Length: 555
Image (tube, rainbow, N blue to C red; front, side):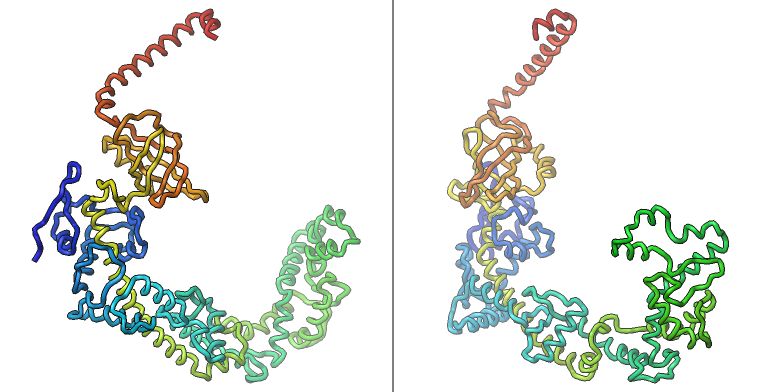
């Protein structure tokens, strides 16, 4: 049964007292209108980031009131002994964990596994440092519960090579330790491409397939002859296009071989220049008849060897007779002759495995590598289940260490009013204008924050804090005593963080409001004086404009 709810007055507010587990449980029934905060950025708290991430269940980088309540329910529901909760200890006795619930028993089992793995099977206390160190070593292992298998997960060299090849052709994925590995999806994709690719390759392999097959119109010579035709096919098509141009407009004949300026600029002694110039010329001199010579002496020197090979190896086989020139129709007949082989190449399956040697693929297709990977993934899944339990033990210890303090910096703010303590959301103190400003709070977006702070009636300064290494962050500092003094944009000072490290501080924005009652009473007179001062300056300037001799005297 819950104790009576107790409040304590801090300043002008009454805040819930949260000093033990019973009082922590009371926030579950406390109306949110009585909370000091109902939402806050996680970055505002000087606290273990892993703890904050666990509380922030929706991952939006903000702590909401319902998330804090869920954390309280989770913690209290797993503790059999919560008497030390208010001490903020990062260790627990195993007897403090509930054993009368499935969730509690799972925590106990995981905690005992950690202690046994650390050679302390008889220990009755487990610490946060032990759990986090053990979890780190688990993640560095080849089987670390992330559903990814790395080559180091097996001692079998053949299986290692298989995993390495899957990674090589798929890119792999990063496992928890940062190493590349494979998933079941990648292995299935890789394995599924092997047999279709090998079957396709056999159809076009003159040594393994049927040389009389339609996809091999020239038998075992088909692949080499196709490569020969394709090597400069684009140049041949350009040549016939230029021939059509010359036939239509004879004036263009001189332009098809480049400009005279390029030829005049050519240095015949420069081999690189000569080859570059030839690269820019057609395969042969375009002419209205549209005939491509096939002798080395009649074509561009860069293509002489190719033209001779085309004539000796292909022309007679396709056209039925030897000839020393090709018409556009002749070239079309040659292209058509290779259509079956081209269609065969375009139907090539196995976009991944095609880069690997055929001998490897045949071995991978015959052996049970995929099954072995499956066994490793099942073992990895078991580790994942175990690691999930260890993460829950870490959650328990983090909540035991920090949740009470977070509640006292969220539901209530007792540390904000204590001269001996610093609230979790405080970042440090500032020395500026000969005085101390002891409250500084980190702020991610000063512009958005200032839009709300303008309604606070406080004199507020936004400062840029620069660390020794050059990195910077922003804080908001309220001025609640004394006077404005020399405070303003551009003013510099010294910032001391919670650990006492010194940084440079510079005011980047100010929301001006009276700092004290004395300044508030003086505001109407200050405004009146500024109005009068402005009028005097206006009158003075007007008089000077009317009296040129006065302007000279004044200057």
